[in-house]
Image (tube, rainbow, N blue to C red; front, side, top):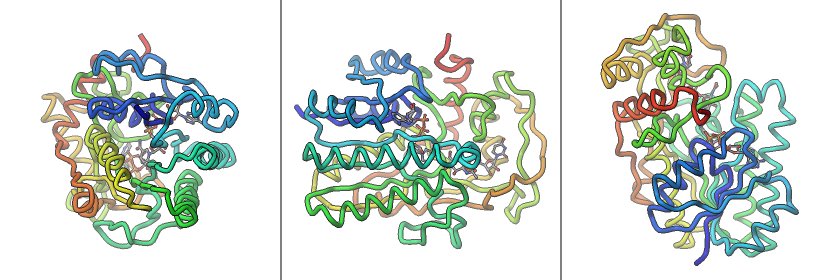
Length: 339
Ligand code: NAD
Ligand code: UD1
């Protein structure tokens, strides 16, 4: 049986995707250098699906080490999650981001040539749309003009993949543009635990809920939106993970290059998310309205019709589900994967 290579498979989205791939009957091989994840994730995956995926602790940039993975397995498709993802850090250390994110992607494409692997799914981001000019965002809207080096790496990798697809008639490439993933596995055994003080909204809320942080600052209450706070498209990480299984199926039909937004199609404001969290978990979240965060766009949500039309995929879980699952994970694992 051939295998799916999942780079970054012990990370937040990767780990949930590995679970869904195994549930769908795929054999999975993970490559991760553990720069932003823990080995413990493998135990959690095994506890959920009863199978321990094969694991290599190496950097995708290490071509020699990666050759071993391709020699020892019969890879039919790659899902490429591995990458650095902190927007703020990318501004401070841009070269680190270009080197890791572009370097790992180029190495993978070279190895695909060498080992005749034709199918690849890439983790892109809504950030490639820069400052969008209309809502909801469709896949044909302009990309580029990103607001950070991190965003630039996603845009540039997309360009490389598009050129790769053009020049390789037998290549199948799925570029998936994620909106804002939140939530956790319903078992409460897998979820997101960022290092340091979270930048993203949901982990900040759960850390206030668990008492690690004192008070959420809502960045701006005077935006031109119904309640004055910014609007985003929050998608449950399990829905997002399932989207990758659909993308792998799609690539099996030899479509060439495909690009999909993965979101819910629905905008939710910061205060709506805070309220949903309070309702779903029957608790109060201590928050205050603060200054706007530089660089934030007022609203950002996806039109996801194309993914439904062409793959039959759509998100089914609600914000309420995501709030319950995020809290279930956080309260059972107050220190993430560390005991
Ligand atoms: P994550 O940090 O939890 O997972 C990424 C994994 O990649 C980590 O386990 C890390 O150790 C690993 N990694 C990084 N560089 C590597 C390398 N050179 N070799 C091997 N492993 C390496 O992040 P995530 O939230 O699961 O995101 C997965 C992907 O989706 C990333 O590419 C990210 O940019 C993209 N994305 C994430 C979001 C989000 O909000 N989480 C939104 C849009 C796109
Ligand atoms: C950020 C990144 C984006 C990345 C995405 C997912 C920026 C400018 N953009 O998007 O590139 O793809 O994360 O990782 O960093 N908020 C608060 N208080 C907080 C935290 C957030 O009010 O403590 C608000 C923000 O102003 C925003 C919303 O919550 O309106 C969501 O923020 P966040 O989770 O950081 O995601 P994005 O800004 O959409």
